[in-house]
Image 1 (cartoon, rainbow, N blue to C red):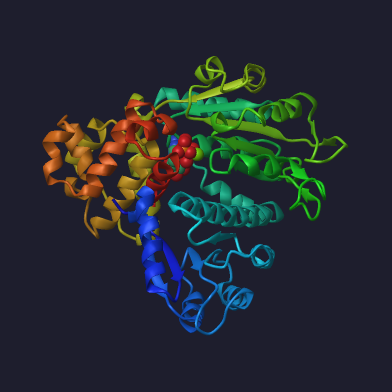
Image 2: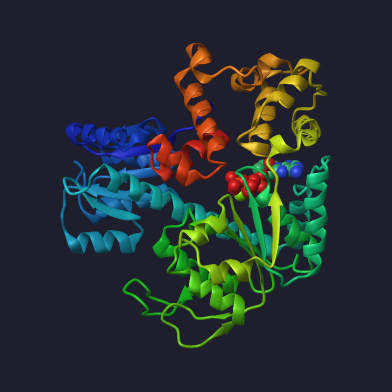
Length: 462
Ligand SMILES: Nc1ncnc2c1ncn2[C@@H]1O[C@H](COP(=O)(O)OP(=O)(O)OP(=O)(O)O)[C@@H](O)[C@H]1O
Ligand SMILES: [Mg+2]
């Protein structure tokens, strides 16, 4: 499995403390996902930060050359967009407030912070960065029509099976009614994101923004502010009024991904919006009207969540005006080879070689049950295209688990010739298939947090 670890720059002058941080990260259960480079002086920290290539910087503020906020500012200046989490022995509220005001993502005090706090701080910092980048990209998208037209080229949908042809037909129908809410249901990797985009770009909202909000990736407390924005003074950190994504999406489409993970507390606000097309900013007193379509997606059984009181029934019925079910790939085998050929052709363009799949590969691809659906197929083909160089794609170029499952060997029998990572990936996929893509259920069975699971899936996607 091609796991690309997170590159962490760990700045600390005390080797014992560095060791402790390494141990904390290792203890988090996701230790193998971190690649740590150490800098022991300000000079080394500044050099590394300027060189870039880090996903995050963990920064001690007391270094041989400087201390306190000066240390932060000197590294921050060079770190550009790399998020910095301060991890220091200085338990000083003023300093913490200043560092955060100056741009630190978080301020942790050594000895007080445990492994999970550290990982959470890293996760939030990365999430904030990702969302900032996404917002920039979205802004660019809505500003430039030509850019949008290019985006649409990526929206090619392959459908040979009658069940996916039905999906395409529904996309066309739904696109014509620009206010109807839509729910997309399907296992992970079945194409919900693609279909949401396709609906938007086939509708008359296409010249307006398409804004995606992933309800499970954004911490609950931030989701509401992200969606609706806030008024100045609504809470301590609300230094000025901020528009939410609903307001920024005016005229376009809001795609609420993984809606099954939306906290119950926020659900009535979404319901109110769907009923009145108005919402209030947090701390606001006036109703704001926006014209947009909501598309929601889930890999969970929403009806079951309603029965368990984890999803509001009224919201479910309000959203359920139009439901599109995306069938798993194993239930539409006619799509496997056309999709594989399509993905090969997209890589051919960049590599310039003409490739075919050997007949034995056809058998393997058709025999596998694809728990990760189209995404898993796409990744397998990308890998095979690279491994096969200038030649055709042969079974040896496909991931091992494909042929192993095709010949229906249980994990225990084939595990002996797998690396630990391969076995892990295979096991995760097996569990995911068993719970039909439900990541919460899978993480419970696997005994890891949802975050770790998401991370492992995300990194195995690359
Ligand atoms: N019918 C299709 N034709 C071409 N490409 C497809 C098709 N379906 C899915 N894909 C591609 O497969 C990948 C996975 O699809 P997508 O991200 O839309 O899945 P998803 O259902 O949103 O998954 P998740 O639940 O994990 O978010 C994407 O790269 C998408 O472009
Ligand atoms: Mg998706």
